[in-house]
Length: 171
Image (cartoon, rainbow, N blue to C red; front, side, top):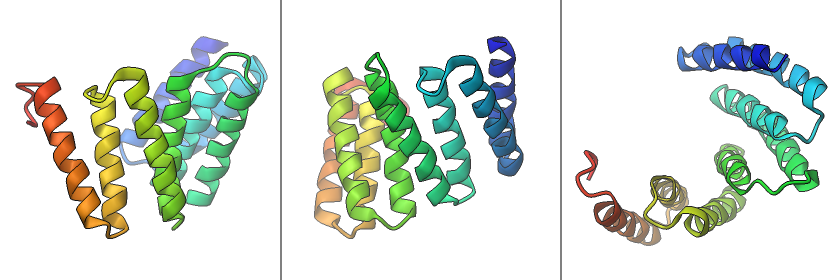
């Protein structure tokens, strides 16, 4: 039943937030299998669960397994009947981090840039998610020792944050 899936997904999220990543992963994998049975392999709920499983793998530094789940989620989105741009962006955000963890920094940078551009188009450059994505992109640049670009992007991000979110405690 879908409510049982939601409850178990929440239980896994709590385990994850408590730092019990192995236990969370076991529950997420079980929920993913049942979600596929209930909804079919390409449903949005399955994509969301694949992303949750991938984050658990990432927390355990099992990046190759995380990438497999994220590739599966993107393939489901590609086959799906409905375009889900927000979900695609969320999956690709996780993919950028995973690629960086795998040492595929150039590809991580390309994906990170695509995520940033997609968010800016979808919600605007000053939206909180765009600000977070821009910061992540700057950190990816920093990790590649592209200091000038990283600092420029971080400065632009601060300007946008101050402009679009005045009074926010982090500004």
